[in-house]
Length: 142
Image (cartoon, rainbow, N blue to C red; front, side, top):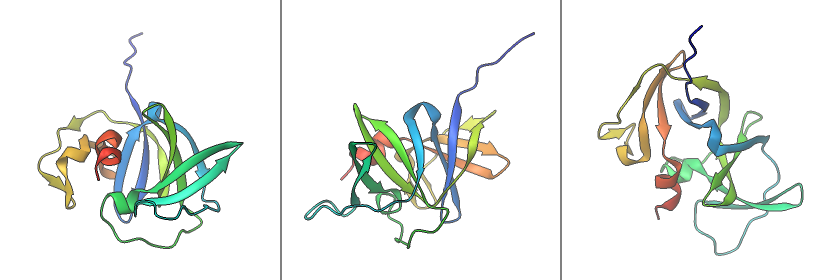
């Protein structure tokens, strides 16, 4: 029996677009909760949450991707990710599934008006085309 190890991704949505990040970058997925605002913080920093005694900064992926902000819904989630030895919360509109991609193409130019440098590539799934995000690129830009 032959097994092929494929990298798993968490697929999520923002507006009508589908994105994914490697599951190895995701610590956990939690429901939207009360966020304590931080005065004078960057526009994409929504604030902080207390996650089982640990303070976690929360960012809006919509703002980081230069999309219009919307009110959270019952589907809104916070992806708690590891970034540079820290935990960060990233707000997304919804989480679809954990998936693998049999084919990943390199990102060319921009995708839906978002710089191609923010993507590791584009995967094909039952949801259609899925942009595989480079969190480091997105989180380190200003």
